Length: 183
Image (tube, rainbow, N blue to C red; front, top):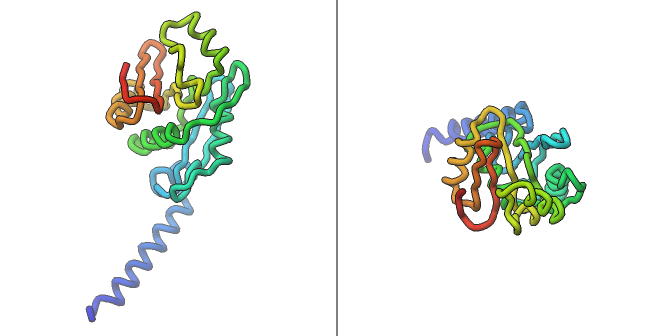
């Protein structure tokens, strides 16, 4: 038997207790970086002024109530319609905020769009797709305070997780869970 066994046991216990104590002192949004078993996202809807910070997945399990709250804050602000957000889109957003190590809320430029809203936007902008994934809860247009949208775009492209559109004149990045493509 190794003479260091009691020391290793005590050291392991000490490290576990220290990590546990540190996690209880961190604010919820900082835990997204520190505790990967809890996937936390924070949002700010620029049109409604609503904010939300919530754990949407814990130990790999989706928290449906939290996804419902996120779907509400991502609703079509013009009509009030809500569509369930694709959990894969949330996972993509979580990977992005984890990589850039931010606790800033994701600014929602556009989340879900009703077919009526999408059609109206198509009349005034060439950049709106007829069958937009926004209408399926599978797309979001974002900014993250303190980060250049160009850098968010490059990071998202590197993740190979869906469509990435960049709109520098409007200063936002489009992300979706459709086929991997870039524009």
